[in-house]
Length: 302
Image 1: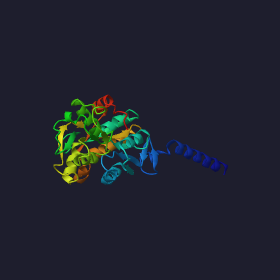
Image 2: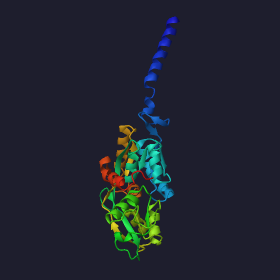
Image 3: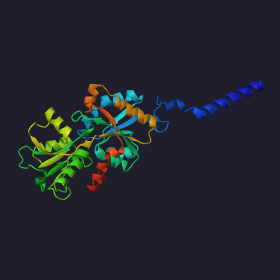
Image 4: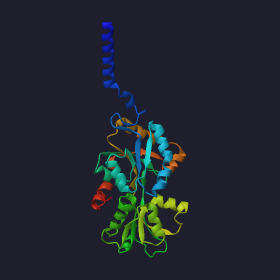
């Protein structure tokens, strides 16, 4: 009896040691239980989207993407659209998001405040590569023909942290001899490309800057009447919106996320994502954005 008693104690001690050393292994694989897993890998995965148009519409449109990503990664996905571009940056740098769809400017803002890395960006169906553009528009019946004529006029930007709705319009204005900080009449931030297009189309401002794809989509949908605005300048090609992760995520999860994007082949899902496919990107692809944002006092704007 005594030998059996000691044998049972020995077995129990071995079991405790095994549990203490390897008991977390079941959760390591990302299957169940929720919370942080392994080397900081979360379940659910918290995904944030910049509100480049009406936030409610953005979130609703991305539900099928959330379902796809959840299936590919084998973990729940929580989609959120914070109220502003700056709020997405804040959430990312405060570890409240794990993956975010940024513009180039919001990415470099986040990178300057936290440990984040870009993974992929979309291939633009309109250009066939990963770039898109920004445009400056005026009302169709405006007398303004050149960007330089906007000096002293009222102007609408999108969000102050928008790459194509704030930074690149400021670059185009500067290249025409206009400092957006001092040389315009009244200027305002509408907080959305769609709102900027409407403000120009309705004659509320003399000009505005926004993303070209969104303008064309609004016109094709009839939200902005064809012929109500006129493009007077187009930017140089802009590197696409990066999908960005907290660097604390494991390399395995980062690679799984990359492969999930590269593997999207459903035409309906690609259309929803405004993409022909995806390509990998890195920090160097956004060096020009950071350089120009610093020069134009937009790197820390929120």
